[in-house]
Amino acid sequence: MNEVMEREQNIVAEAPVKKEKAKIKKVLIICSKGKIEDVYAALVMANGALMEGIEARMFFTFFGLEAITKKHADHLHTATVGNPAFMPTLPTMVAGLPGFEAFASYMMKKEMDKLDMPHVTEFLQMIEAGGGEIYACKLAADMFHLKLEDFVPEVKGIITVGDMYALADGEGTQIIFI
Amino acid sequence: METLVFNDTKIDVNEEGYLKNPAQWTPELAHEFAHEANITLTDKHFEVLNWLRAKHAEGVPLSIRKVGNSGIVDIKQFYALFPGGPLKISSKIAGIPKPVSCI
Image (tube, rainbow over all chains, first blue to last red):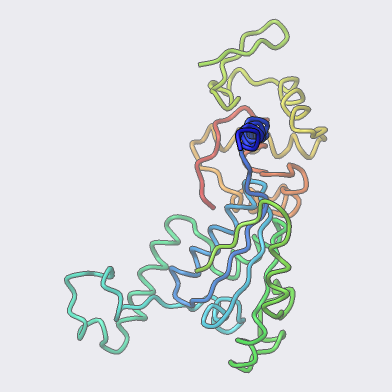
């Protein structure tokens, strides 16, 4: 018994000490939402990764597909209803009036312009130029009847969930879901 | 504050190695910093570096997008010239502070 314990202690003592901090080498950012703030969160993180020398892959699914369609990419809205953080004192009934959401989104985009934030299509171009890769989800694209030609040219392909996981291969990869 | 001695001149740098005073920058120092980043500087690199220095002197906050619109390089070329974090690396080589931009 004693012998066994001694041996175990030895093993513990000999265990290699990990000194180096593991760095993030690659991020896979999944964007499943089509609200302007969610899409920008995904874009800023992907672009920010590239700026730091981290590889970036993006996978757009469900309503996130809105952000990469030619038709809607630069016309995303924020949600004024069902969003308690949006003007907390504003009654929901008012926030739901026709045109209110468009107006709020317009104001938000104006503030973003002031910060020199690019529009969605330009942001996608920047990400591609920086070596990032952008993909659309096959299941969601089928559901919304979207084809590759409906997407902005930066979209590399329409892929399955299995292919998506393959994008995250390699050590030091993080998957971020929005 | 840390000090670096280059060609018998004392140069003040911060803990990340960025120059504290852009006026202490010389092209030779740029070559030295570039060497550390495994980059061999060409005329194109210097065009970008000079543009960055000029914009910094004007007080313009720098971003990758602004470099892309500079007319000197597009974003793709910028990444190719300074691989592995172009804005950070080029700012260091250009002797200006680390950029604070998120875009």
